[in-house]
Length: 90
Image 1 (cartoon, rainbow, N blue to C red):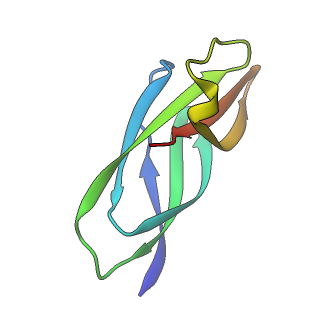
Image 2: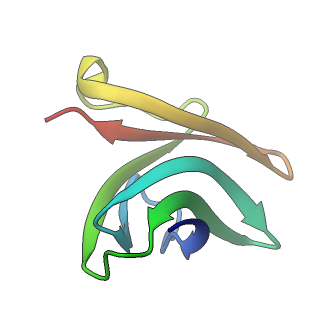
């Protein structure tokens, strides 16, 4: 069965972070609830194993290392800040 799950993204405004999600999941969105960042993913509930997704989050105006290796996932606004979420192509 497929279900949408919400996962916290542990992030302290440094560029590199990660989230622990089900191994068979497809990210569909990111967003803030209060001051906490979450991602939503479609998950096949037959799988219980998890994996770590490495994310890079940059504020507008921040320097980006090797931007051609990044895939943009989402841009979010939080108060006066604008955050851009990426995953690095491997």
